[in-house]
Length: 568
Image (cartoon, rainbow, N blue to C red):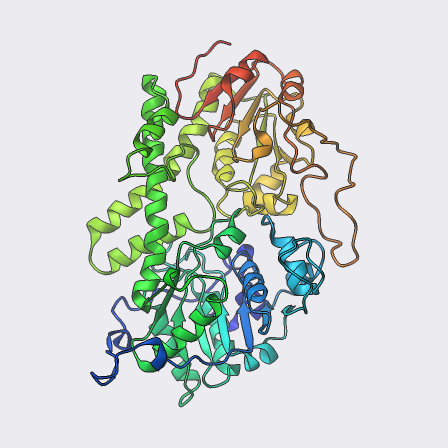
């Protein structure tokens, strides 16, 4: 099926399940060469330097965000909050997703997002004293022609997964959804509209978009900007509110610079001007990939050290603290664990490696691919340790998995670290594998595991952590949720029958969280340990637990980055 034949509800939705498996377009990678437009110099007289006074800012009344996912939804909400005179409409062709955004239960879990959306979507009075009652200016819709036609700025926040077929399979970016959405934008956008790449895209995509617009709308003028997101799931609202930087790439022409200033003016409503960096589009697109690649590189580096620590008796946390105090290195992203998951790091490293390979830089491609390989090996090593502790025999044993999302404070199951661990353990034919996650929905978990796993009947998802862990021979902590810490500072109120924290709504009948109550409550490890079955192993894949306290409960603990004593 060609890209033109793909239903628009797939092409236009940013939800992860829509684009990673469907047949899509041919090779998505643009020509790896600099854009001629990016290389142009500003044609201004020497006596007229390009200052802000000479840059006109286009008035903005309507903003369209294409893609109601993890990027589009939060970005639109923050833009609407700080620009009350601007109407922000989020467009997605998935009516169920739009319905959820309009309901009390949003399709994306992000701390603070539900309150923020309520303020700008409903116009209700905020509980926060610094946010007064206001008119609503955030809307969610599937009416693409109307919304695109009136937008002054159009943000493209459509899913761009890794291409899994054909040329570049496993490395190149699958641009089918992006291209499909762009064709709709090209058909309906008014001349002079500013098109903004918010999705993570390969270098050269801005030039690709310019050519697409010229082909579909010859004679119409549009400007294309690169404005990549630098969000971390679980802290997206904080990242949007106080970003380290806002990157805006534009064509080095008067019109391109004016478009960049127009977009910058939206951000200046709450972001200091010195944090807004203007570049050409190639630099902006590449900076996004490189930022994620370097962060992921640090994770793989400390995880390689954790393997050495487990063999020698060194403590990886102590090593990380020591090297993190070096000002040249810093302490961020030096936490050993199962590695990185999610929809960004692996994909962006693969895209960067593919770019290098396409430029004939095989050694550079090999270097970056090793970061992903190290990440995969860390999960393999964790699963093998579980098998080894049971002397290679999991038959008849129950294993419980705490956490399925790739990190805490999110319900995103894409590229979950648990998936490969569970698949490797299933090869050893355990009696049962149970899963509990405070934010992930059962249908999302089973979809990520794949139909083959669901048909086996061995894997079960529970909405109560104690039911999931009851009679387990081993518990694997896969996600770094604060709820899983074995501290005695909070009293748990988990109860499978208590559903008081979730009210029913006719607008969200499909809302089925995994946890039915108390998602912010710390679980009671004494209760967990009491109902476990010998040999009572806990495998801490996140370095989250207090090993000494668990041992007092009669539990054996294997923690990443530490040598394990085989007896309590």
